[in-house]
Image 1 (tube, rainbow, N blue to C red):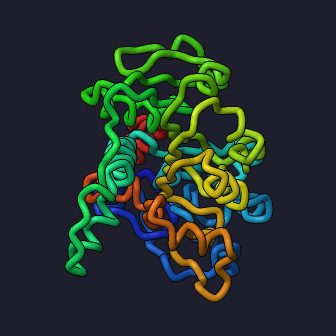
Image 2: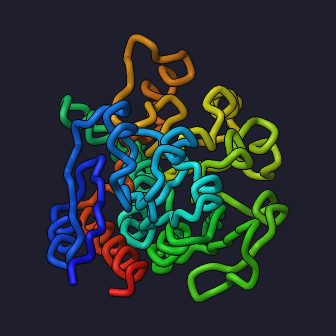
Image 3: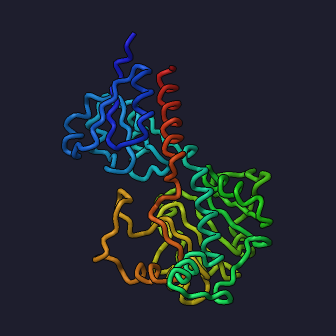
Length: 317
């Protein structure tokens, strides 16, 4: 018997997502060019939406979706979806952090190694015929204390990849207890403030975490630290990060995400770059990437596969 379940794809995804759902009996409409106005008009005809980050799924949109059963985000962060309101309307909200956790874990380690060993700076110098060895002497991860804030899929994946480096890994998660495992030891924020050499952020963007990392926060660390952020840009207050880098409290930063990203994560306007961002761009103590930590070829497919399982489970297939 046909499912007669219509799914609206607002953003492009790995083709296996719509191909497998179609074979399973779902009706998949790929409408990547629809405007918000068009989506609002047509949404009552759909049972599900699959998005990445192109538009916000807010109360206005949810109220138009009288037949909506689920919203699926092809990624981890859910800040573009009013999940609380959707759930109050009986709409399921899915994401797929298990799909890109391995990519994020590897990327965070790669950024740390790049920063600590001056790889970007040294590579640029060698290409210019400059051969500086002492000036590019590296710092080892071995015997350092790594602090992880947020020990879900991403934090755990990072900890796993650190396990061979000979470091001590401490993990803090406000909403979890008993999280100690073979990869990390459960910790308190007080212990992180006392012991950490390298801090890595793996928290969602919420009202609670927005600008969580500011000058007051950074000054609580007893040691000078390195900072890694592969979570969301607005978890870190850029003005304060730069202030603490200039003061010597933050020795360097690995930033895959920036406070000044657009909502769709796909552009920065050079003409609107504020002074703190200019500082980061021109600093040899900063490694920057354009929100690609979870953006591997493999994660592209694994995210789709995770959503397929969740959607089919909802319909008991």
